[in-house]
Length: 315
Image (cartoon, rainbow, N blue to C red):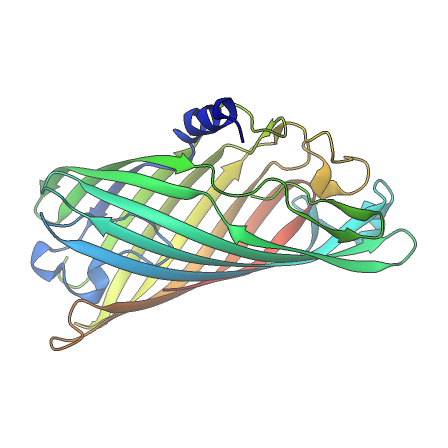
Protein backbone atom coordinates (compact mmCIF):
# COMPACT_ATOMS: atom_id res chain seq x y z
CA UNK A 1 0.00 0.00 0.00
CA UNK A 2 1.40 3.40 -0.91
CA UNK A 3 1.76 6.32 1.49
CA UNK A 4 -1.29 8.13 0.15
CA UNK A 5 -3.53 5.13 0.73
CA UNK A 6 -2.10 4.66 4.21
CA UNK A 7 -2.65 8.31 5.06
CA UNK A 8 -6.25 8.24 3.87
CA UNK A 9 -6.79 5.06 5.86
CA UNK A 10 -5.57 6.83 8.98
CA UNK A 11 -7.69 9.92 8.34
CA UNK A 12 -10.76 7.79 7.66
CA UNK A 13 -9.94 5.66 10.68
CA UNK A 14 -10.01 8.68 12.98
CA UNK A 15 -13.76 8.21 13.21
CA UNK A 16 -13.86 4.45 12.79
CA UNK A 17 -13.79 3.50 16.45
CA UNK A 18 -16.86 4.33 18.56
CA UNK A 19 -17.28 7.80 19.99
CA UNK A 20 -19.51 7.10 22.98
CA UNK A 21 -21.12 8.57 26.06
CA UNK A 22 -21.73 6.38 29.11
CA UNK A 23 -23.87 7.01 32.18
CA UNK A 24 -24.10 4.46 34.97
CA UNK A 25 -25.04 3.92 38.59
CA UNK A 26 -22.99 1.75 40.93
CA UNK A 27 -21.91 2.15 44.52
CA UNK A 28 -18.25 3.28 44.77
CA UNK A 29 -17.62 1.11 47.82
CA UNK A 30 -18.65 -1.94 45.79
CA UNK A 31 -16.61 -1.21 42.65
CA UNK A 32 -14.71 -4.49 43.05
CA UNK A 33 -17.84 -6.66 43.12
CA UNK A 34 -19.34 -8.50 40.17
CA UNK A 35 -22.40 -6.27 39.67
CA UNK A 36 -20.24 -3.12 39.45
CA UNK A 37 -19.27 -3.98 35.87
CA UNK A 38 -21.36 -3.88 32.71
CA UNK A 39 -22.17 -6.99 30.68
CA UNK A 40 -19.23 -8.56 28.83
CA UNK A 41 -20.73 -7.37 25.53
CA UNK A 42 -20.30 -3.70 26.53
CA UNK A 43 -16.89 -2.27 25.63
CA UNK A 44 -15.06 0.48 27.55
CA UNK A 45 -17.69 0.90 30.25
CA UNK A 46 -15.31 2.03 33.02
CA UNK A 47 -11.92 3.61 33.72
CA UNK A 48 -9.30 2.94 36.42
CA UNK A 49 -7.36 4.69 39.12
CA UNK A 50 -3.93 6.12 38.24
CA UNK A 51 -1.38 3.41 37.48
CA UNK A 52 -3.93 0.59 37.25
CA UNK A 53 -4.15 -1.62 34.18
CA UNK A 54 -6.46 -4.36 32.96
CA UNK A 55 -6.12 -7.09 30.33
CA UNK A 56 -9.16 -8.79 28.79
CA UNK A 57 -10.12 -11.54 26.38
CA UNK A 58 -13.49 -11.94 24.67
CA UNK A 59 -14.76 -14.70 22.41
CA UNK A 60 -17.96 -13.99 20.47
CA UNK A 61 -19.90 -16.45 18.32
CA UNK A 62 -22.78 -15.37 16.08
CA UNK A 63 -25.23 -17.54 14.14
CA UNK A 64 -26.98 -15.87 11.20
CA UNK A 65 -29.64 -18.06 9.56
CA UNK A 66 -32.09 -17.27 6.77
CA UNK A 67 -32.77 -14.06 4.86
CA UNK A 68 -34.90 -11.09 5.81
CA UNK A 69 -36.30 -8.17 3.78
CA UNK A 70 -37.74 -5.38 5.90
CA UNK A 71 -39.09 -7.21 8.94
CA UNK A 72 -40.28 -10.23 6.93
CA UNK A 73 -38.56 -13.58 6.45
CA UNK A 74 -37.91 -14.40 2.77
CA UNK A 75 -37.12 -17.81 1.28
CA UNK A 76 -34.10 -18.79 -0.80
CA UNK A 77 -36.35 -18.99 -3.87
CA UNK A 78 -37.43 -15.38 -3.28
CA UNK A 79 -33.79 -14.27 -3.23
CA UNK A 80 -32.93 -16.39 -6.29
CA UNK A 81 -35.69 -14.68 -8.28
CA UNK A 82 -33.48 -11.57 -8.33
CA UNK A 83 -29.96 -12.93 -7.79
CA UNK A 84 -27.93 -15.84 -9.16
CA UNK A 85 -26.84 -16.87 -5.65
CA UNK A 86 -28.56 -16.76 -2.26
CA UNK A 87 -26.62 -16.83 1.03
CA UNK A 88 -28.35 -19.28 3.38
CA UNK A 89 -26.53 -18.95 6.70
CA UNK A 90 -23.31 -17.65 8.26
CA UNK A 91 -21.21 -18.43 11.32
CA UNK A 92 -18.88 -15.77 12.73
CA UNK A 93 -16.29 -16.14 15.50
CA UNK A 94 -14.33 -13.20 16.87
CA UNK A 95 -11.52 -13.35 19.42
CA UNK A 96 -10.76 -9.99 21.02
CA UNK A 97 -7.73 -9.17 23.18
CA UNK A 98 -7.78 -5.89 25.07
CA UNK A 99 -5.42 -3.88 27.25
CA UNK A 100 -6.38 -0.83 29.31
CA UNK A 101 -4.09 1.48 31.30
CA UNK A 102 -4.70 4.67 33.31
CA UNK A 103 -1.59 6.90 33.25
CA UNK A 104 -3.45 9.40 35.44
CA UNK A 105 -6.73 9.48 37.30
CA UNK A 106 -8.18 11.82 34.68
CA UNK A 107 -8.26 9.42 31.72
CA UNK A 108 -7.51 5.86 30.61
CA UNK A 109 -6.26 4.37 27.33
CA UNK A 110 -7.41 1.13 25.72
CA UNK A 111 -6.36 -0.98 22.72
CA UNK A 112 -8.56 -3.74 21.27
CA UNK A 113 -7.15 -6.30 18.80
CA UNK A 114 -9.72 -8.56 17.06
CA UNK A 115 -9.21 -11.76 15.06
CA UNK A 116 -12.21 -12.79 12.94
CA UNK A 117 -13.13 -16.15 11.39
CA UNK A 118 -16.35 -16.51 9.39
CA UNK A 119 -18.03 -18.99 7.05
CA UNK A 120 -21.02 -18.44 4.76
CA UNK A 121 -23.12 -21.10 3.00
CA UNK A 122 -24.73 -20.36 -0.39
CA UNK A 123 -27.30 -21.83 -2.80
CA UNK A 124 -27.28 -21.16 -6.57
CA UNK A 125 -30.17 -21.14 -9.06
CA UNK A 126 -28.95 -24.49 -10.39
CA UNK A 127 -29.27 -26.03 -6.93
CA UNK A 128 -25.54 -26.16 -6.23
CA UNK A 129 -24.35 -25.41 -2.70
CA UNK A 130 -20.96 -24.01 -1.68
CA UNK A 131 -19.26 -22.43 1.32
CA UNK A 132 -16.85 -19.49 1.49
CA UNK A 133 -14.55 -18.83 4.43
CA UNK A 134 -12.34 -15.96 5.52
CA UNK A 135 -10.23 -15.25 8.58
CA UNK A 136 -7.67 -12.73 9.72
CA UNK A 137 -6.92 -9.68 11.81
CA UNK A 138 -9.69 -7.10 12.06
CA UNK A 139 -9.33 -3.35 12.53
CA UNK A 140 -7.36 -2.49 15.67
CA UNK A 141 -9.03 0.18 17.82
CA UNK A 142 -7.39 2.68 20.16
CA UNK A 143 -9.70 4.45 22.62
CA UNK A 144 -9.30 7.22 25.18
CA UNK A 145 -11.79 7.26 28.07
CA UNK A 146 -12.40 10.36 30.14
CA UNK A 147 -14.68 10.36 33.23
CA UNK A 148 -16.07 13.87 33.65
CA UNK A 149 -18.71 13.50 36.37
CA UNK A 150 -18.87 11.49 39.59
CA UNK A 151 -21.46 12.16 42.24
CA UNK A 152 -22.21 9.38 44.71
CA UNK A 153 -23.14 6.23 42.79
CA UNK A 154 -23.63 8.08 39.48
CA UNK A 155 -20.94 8.65 36.88
CA UNK A 156 -20.59 9.90 33.30
CA UNK A 157 -17.80 9.05 30.88
CA UNK A 158 -16.96 10.00 27.30
CA UNK A 159 -14.91 7.83 24.91
CA UNK A 160 -13.15 8.84 21.70
CA UNK A 161 -11.52 6.24 19.48
CA UNK A 162 -9.19 5.81 16.54
CA UNK A 163 -9.57 2.81 14.25
CA UNK A 164 -6.51 1.50 12.40
CA UNK A 165 -7.44 -0.09 9.02
CA UNK A 166 -5.53 -3.33 9.64
CA UNK A 167 -8.29 -5.66 8.41
CA UNK A 168 -8.10 -7.00 4.86
CA UNK A 169 -10.57 -5.90 2.15
CA UNK A 170 -9.13 -8.21 -0.54
CA UNK A 171 -10.06 -11.66 0.80
CA UNK A 172 -10.92 -14.21 -1.92
CA UNK A 173 -12.27 -17.78 -1.87
CA UNK A 174 -13.38 -20.47 -4.31
CA UNK A 175 -16.94 -20.36 -5.72
CA UNK A 176 -18.68 -21.99 -8.73
CA UNK A 177 -17.70 -18.84 -10.65
CA UNK A 178 -14.02 -19.28 -9.77
CA UNK A 179 -11.89 -17.65 -7.11
CA UNK A 180 -13.48 -14.26 -6.45
CA UNK A 181 -13.38 -11.48 -3.89
CA UNK A 182 -15.88 -11.98 -1.06
CA UNK A 183 -18.76 -9.58 -0.37
CA UNK A 184 -19.09 -6.75 2.13
CA UNK A 185 -19.15 -7.66 5.84
CA UNK A 186 -19.45 -5.68 8.82
CA UNK A 187 -22.06 -5.00 21.93
CA UNK A 188 -27.56 1.09 44.74
CA UNK A 189 -25.61 -1.36 46.90
CA UNK A 190 -27.86 -4.15 45.70
CA UNK A 191 -27.89 -3.34 41.99
CA UNK A 192 -26.29 -1.30 39.25
CA UNK A 193 -27.49 0.04 35.94
CA UNK A 194 -26.06 1.99 33.06
CA UNK A 195 -26.43 3.15 29.50
CA UNK A 196 -24.13 3.81 26.56
CA UNK A 197 -24.60 5.49 23.21
CA UNK A 198 -21.96 5.22 20.51
CA UNK A 199 -21.44 6.25 16.91
CA UNK A 200 -19.10 4.86 14.26
CA UNK A 201 -18.62 7.29 11.37
CA UNK A 202 -16.45 6.41 8.39
CA UNK A 203 -14.93 9.09 6.18
CA UNK A 204 -13.09 8.61 2.91
CA UNK A 205 -13.00 5.46 0.77
CA UNK A 206 -10.57 2.55 0.81
CA UNK A 207 -8.40 1.25 -2.04
CA UNK A 208 -11.38 -0.67 -3.45
CA UNK A 209 -13.43 2.53 -3.82
CA UNK A 210 -15.99 2.04 -1.05
CA UNK A 211 -16.53 2.87 2.59
CA UNK A 212 -18.22 0.56 5.08
CA UNK A 213 -21.45 1.59 6.75
CA UNK A 214 -21.89 4.13 9.54
CA UNK A 215 -23.33 2.57 12.70
CA UNK A 216 -25.28 4.00 15.64
CA UNK A 217 -25.78 2.08 18.87
CA UNK A 218 -27.65 2.56 22.13
CA UNK A 219 -27.60 0.04 24.97
CA UNK A 220 -28.87 -0.07 28.53
CA UNK A 221 -28.27 -2.68 31.22
CA UNK A 222 -29.39 -3.64 34.72
CA UNK A 223 -27.28 -5.86 36.96
CA UNK A 224 -28.21 -7.49 40.27
CA UNK A 225 -25.82 -9.46 42.50
CA UNK A 226 -26.37 -13.06 43.49
CA UNK A 227 -23.66 -12.54 46.10
CA UNK A 228 -20.47 -10.43 46.30
CA UNK A 229 -18.76 -12.64 43.71
CA UNK A 230 -21.53 -13.21 41.13
CA UNK A 231 -24.19 -11.15 39.41
CA UNK A 232 -26.76 -11.50 36.63
CA UNK A 233 -27.55 -8.81 34.08
CA UNK A 234 -30.25 -7.92 31.58
CA UNK A 235 -29.41 -5.71 28.61
CA UNK A 236 -31.25 -4.17 25.67
CA UNK A 237 -29.10 -3.33 22.65
CA UNK A 238 -30.34 -1.30 19.64
CA UNK A 239 -28.27 -0.71 16.51
CA UNK A 240 -28.98 0.98 13.18
CA UNK A 241 -26.66 1.09 10.17
CA UNK A 242 -26.66 2.39 6.60
CA UNK A 243 -25.70 1.19 3.13
CA UNK A 244 -22.20 0.86 1.70
CA UNK A 245 -20.88 4.13 0.27
CA UNK A 246 -19.44 3.44 -3.19
CA UNK A 247 -18.86 -0.02 -4.66
CA UNK A 248 -16.05 -2.53 -5.21
CA UNK A 249 -15.66 -2.79 -9.03
CA UNK A 250 -14.79 -6.50 -8.71
CA UNK A 251 -18.13 -7.36 -7.07
CA UNK A 252 -21.21 -8.00 -9.24
CA UNK A 253 -24.27 -6.67 -7.35
CA UNK A 254 -26.64 -8.80 -9.47
CA UNK A 255 -24.91 -12.05 -8.54
CA UNK A 256 -25.55 -12.27 -4.78
CA UNK A 257 -27.17 -9.88 -2.26
CA UNK A 258 -24.00 -9.54 -0.13
CA UNK A 259 -22.29 -7.97 -3.18
CA UNK A 260 -25.01 -5.30 -3.50
CA UNK A 261 -23.90 -2.10 -1.69
CA UNK A 262 -27.50 -0.81 -1.65
CA UNK A 263 -28.75 -3.85 0.32
CA UNK A 264 -26.71 -3.44 3.52
CA UNK A 265 -28.78 -1.08 5.72
CA UNK A 266 -30.85 -2.20 8.67
CA UNK A 267 -31.72 -1.95 12.34
CA UNK A 268 -31.98 -4.47 15.17
CA UNK A 269 -33.05 -4.69 18.80
CA UNK A 270 -31.53 -7.48 20.95
CA UNK A 271 -32.24 -8.81 24.42
CA UNK A 272 -29.11 -10.10 26.17
CA UNK A 273 -28.73 -12.03 29.44
CA UNK A 274 -25.39 -12.04 31.25
CA UNK A 275 -23.52 -13.61 34.14
CA UNK A 276 -20.47 -11.99 35.80
CA UNK A 277 -18.18 -13.90 38.19
CA UNK A 278 -15.58 -12.07 40.29
CA UNK A 279 -12.74 -14.04 41.90
CA UNK A 280 -12.70 -13.87 45.73
CA UNK A 281 -9.82 -12.40 47.68
CA UNK A 282 -6.68 -14.50 47.40
CA UNK A 283 -4.36 -15.58 44.62
CA UNK A 284 -6.97 -14.87 41.90
CA UNK A 285 -8.07 -11.49 43.25
CA UNK A 286 -8.70 -9.06 40.40
CA UNK A 287 -9.72 -11.73 37.89
CA UNK A 288 -13.24 -12.04 36.52
CA UNK A 289 -15.16 -14.29 34.14
CA UNK A 290 -18.32 -13.38 32.22
CA UNK A 291 -20.73 -14.71 29.61
CA UNK A 292 -23.62 -13.08 27.74
CA UNK A 293 -26.24 -14.65 25.45
CA UNK A 294 -28.48 -12.59 23.18
CA UNK A 295 -31.38 -13.04 20.76
CA UNK A 296 -33.00 -10.46 18.46
CA UNK A 297 -36.37 -9.13 19.56
CA UNK A 298 -36.86 -7.30 16.26
CA UNK A 299 -34.98 -6.85 13.00
CA UNK A 300 -35.70 -4.69 9.97
CA UNK A 301 -33.24 -5.17 7.11
CA UNK A 302 -32.93 -3.52 3.69
CA UNK A 303 -32.71 -6.98 2.21
CA UNK A 304 -32.56 -9.61 1.30
CA UNK A 305 -29.98 -9.95 4.07
CA UNK A 306 -29.09 -12.80 6.40
CA UNK A 307 -30.76 -12.25 9.78
CA UNK A 308 -29.16 -12.82 13.16
CA UNK A 309 -30.33 -15.91 15.05
CA UNK A 310 -28.31 -15.63 18.30
CA UNK A 311 -25.10 -14.17 19.76
CA UNK A 312 -22.87 -15.61 22.49
CA UNK A 313 -20.03 -13.64 24.10
CA UNK A 314 -17.58 -15.09 26.61
CA UNK A 315 -14.62 -13.36 28.22
